[in-house]
Length: 368
Image 1 (tube, rainbow, N blue to C red):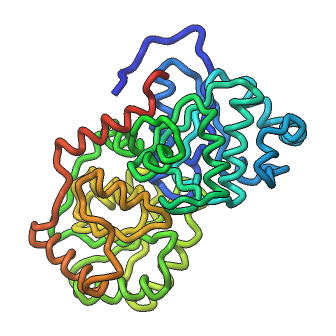
Image 2 (cartoon, rainbow, N blue to C red):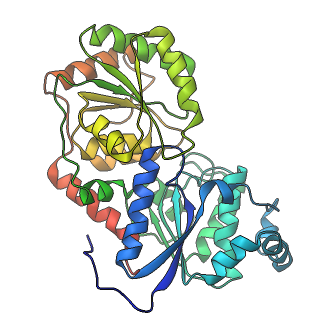
C-alpha cells in the first residue's frame, strides 16, 4: 500500500465516475473510499460523480450508432452541462464499475456511454477498474449486448476487472485486461480491522438481489431451528444513505418465519465490519459481504448472486462455490455449514491467499 506523501503543489484532478460510497450498502462505501484514498496518495485531488446521478442522465443512447455519433454527443453534453464540466476539467477519469456493468438496462448503458464519450470525444484517459463485466448478465455470449460492451471496452485506456469471470468475458471480446480484485480488502487492511469470529457468536444473515421469498423463508426456518433460543441471529443491512431497498422486503419475509430475527441496521462502516467480524457464520448472497467475511476469517455460506461475480470471487479466494440448487436440499446445506462453523471445521481463507488478493486489488492503481 502506498504510504503518505509530501504535499504536492500542482495536483492533477482525478474524477471518479460511478461513485458508490453514499448509497446501497456499506461494502460499496468501503471499496469506493479506498479508491478515493489511493488516488489522493498518488498526488491527485479527487472529484466524483455519484452513481444515482449518472444512472438517470438523458438523452440515453438507444442504438449502437448513437455512441459514435458526434451530434448525439453534442446534444448529450449540452443537456448535462455539470457532467460535461466535471469531465473536461479532469486530467484522469477513473470508473468504479463495481456491479453496474451487466445487461442493457438504463444505468449500465448510460455509464457505458459516459466512458465512450469521455474517451472518444473529450480525449481523456479512462481507466475502468474495480468492476464486473457481464453484457448479457452471465458469462455466455449475448450478441447485441456484446457488440456495445465490446465497442466501449475497445477504446478505454485500461481495464481491471475484479474477478476472473469478467476477465474471461472481456478476453472473449478481444480486450486486454489486467486481473484485479475488489478494493474492499485494501480498505479492511488500511483500517486494521481484525478477525474476531468465535463459535459462540451470532449468525449474521444478509440479503441478496436475487433472493426469492421462498428461499428467504427456507433460510430463516433452518437458521431459526439450528440456532435455537440461545444464539442471536442478526439480519445485517445499512448504508451511508439510501440503503438497498430489497433488504426491507427480505427482512419481512425472513422475520415472518423467524420472529426472533433481529435487524441490525449498521449506522457506520465500523459497525458493519464488526458485525461481520464477530459473527460465528455469515449467510449471504451479497458480493461485498462475502469478501468482508473472507478477509476477516469469518465462516460463511454463500448464496448465488445476479451474475457470476460471487462464484468467481469464491474461486479466487479458495472457497466453496455458492450453495447449489441441485444436490442436498438448501436447508441441509445450511444446517451442515452452520455446524461446521460452530465446531471449527469451516474452511477459512489462508493468510497467503488474503495477501495475494490484496496484491490483485492494488492492480487497480497500476500506472496512476
